[in-house]
Image 1 (cartoon, rainbow, N blue to C red):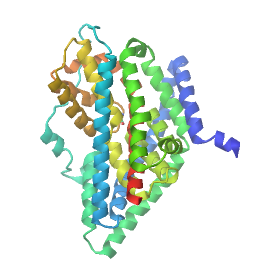
Image 2: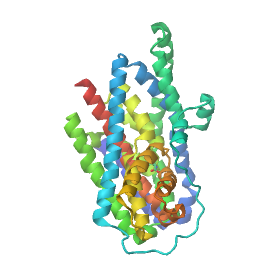
Image 3: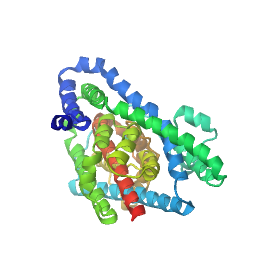
Length: 399
Ligand code: ASP
């Protein structure tokens, strides 16, 4: 029994992370050659995302006891997503002004790289939510439009006759159950997948840039740590009256996988599994809060972006006014909602934030070297934020 616990997937995954760093550092070529093993694991997880998102949101909404409950869960989820994201950005901005990394280090012009610029247009942003053709969105894996359609579809189903709704409900419930079984099988491969993913990341990016940008890296890591260890648990404790640390220990496998894959979306199958089976979150709350959260609730990304843009301003010798800092606050919040749950998405959205305060988009090149490293940490925090929200809303509904 004790050995079984010691050899649990969580512990083996932790070991795989440490081992992967060492392997990637000492065996560059082998790590790059064997990356395919990590990619297979990642693809297996990704394969489940769309059926799981559609099925879990559909059954979550249609299993609510009425429109009142739907309204209540929806309002709570959005209030949670927005307030924790805003707190994260604020923490990033405050911590930045205390530590002030990069002050006085006027680095020379950024190395030239071509980066596609993401334009900031509220109308495009809103339009991108609505799929003109749901099958096209499904084929392309465009998660936000898929979620938008599924919510509408499920709410519409609440208005059809009960016996017809139950046909649809049973259909999606069966898909969901079958996907969760696949998820369980794939989760058993986590230690192997994670080992090779981490090894390839270390082999490809190396650890050296982290040393040269240490003040920036440390500021981001400190802010992420405060948000994960203090802010989020405090919200869980005061509003949900549960022990957030005990809950974290129960569900820690999901943030570990988020860390290793740097993808909130790829972690979704695992998040649903652990929240329901180990974290005691009801299926209807997990099915609503987690898929939505994996796509739009990204505290870690928001926090990282606020620090990154201030750092770029600092090393470019640009002083940001209060009005510009407020602009950063708003654009970063939207950018984190719009960022996809995939590796490096936060960096792409950074172009929009830089543009909003008139900083050159090319200056991203200054921080690109450490992005993958920071991506792992911010994705783990994104995921932890989603899981804490699921537990909190579950508690609020059942009290
Ligand atoms: N990799 C992050 C995620 O999937 C997004 C980001 O790049 O910040 O949550």
